[in-house]
Length: 153
Image 1 (cartoon, rainbow, N blue to C red):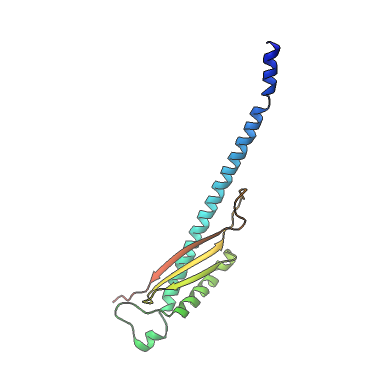
Image 2: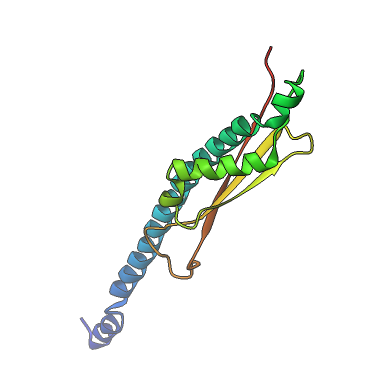
């Protein structure tokens, strides 16, 4: 081989190593993103269950308020007491261990104008197993559940 060709080969030595390291880094970041996205999806699914259960409990126990005893059961829908709904949602989250499972869990309760539909929004810090450089330090995730109280005859 002429001397000129050998020097050209030496100049390109190490380029494959640099490319392999770059691809390995990109692959590691892709794996971290997939793992974190899966963890976020699973935690959101679990929060959906918590929000649905809290809305059902709030609608159920909120309908057992004083108006039912003083005014009787209405023909179409039970009126809900907003204060009892919020208290029963909080009690539900405590009794199911949601506060322990999701440290930093918070909730809001919306009751519609007709006071028949309960919507519970829950939010919690997202616990990610891997950290991707450039991602936020603290991420939150939320879910919503709702329930309607109706009278069946």
